[in-house]
Amino acid sequence: MAGHHLILGRLVDVVTGETITDTHDERLRQKIAQLLLEKKGYHRTEILPRQPLVVAADQNRARIKIDFLVQLNHRIGMLIKYGPGSIVTRHRSALAAGRLVTPYQIPVIAVTNGCDADILEGPTGIKIAHGINALPGRQQLIQIMAATGFQPVDTRRARLESRILYCYEVDGSCPCDDDICKL
Image 1 (tube, rainbow, N blue to C red):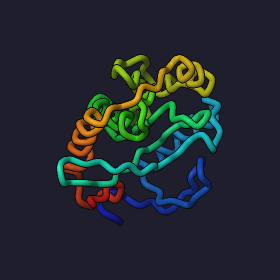
Image 2 (cartoon, one colour; image 1 turned 135 degrees about the horizontal axis):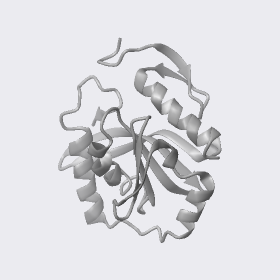
Image 3 (spheres, rainbow, N blue to C red; image 1 turned 45 degrees about the horizontal axis):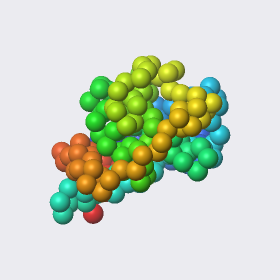
């Protein structure tokens, strides 16, 4: 057993084909990936799992992982943040991540626990849909992206969003969490 996660063995990631550690959380992430592939029409090459992101608060820096980014036509259109339990408590950190992963505001931010989901409009943070099946499909995301201006995130805003994300994801995190690496 590594840290507080019960290791159930190994499993094959449905997106990448890599063999990864099997945990209860990873099984739910795989369920999300299968939904994106089988019901929402995305191609494996359009789903980017476990993407690293460096966040900072003053001199403190850490690398965290973004569960899923969905990329269409060389632009990230959707960020999906998984976390067990309450999804409402993850809205703010997911919005912050959507303003840091790319130099522009990601249009769709989804927060999910694998069973339920809130879909947020990236620029405003307004909830636009609810439920795991409300994750936008490929064609719907193409339409959303076409109507998006992909507004750049200014450096001051990015710095503030990084502090927020550091506080939510790193401060107070479990020392045995291997998804977070303090730098």
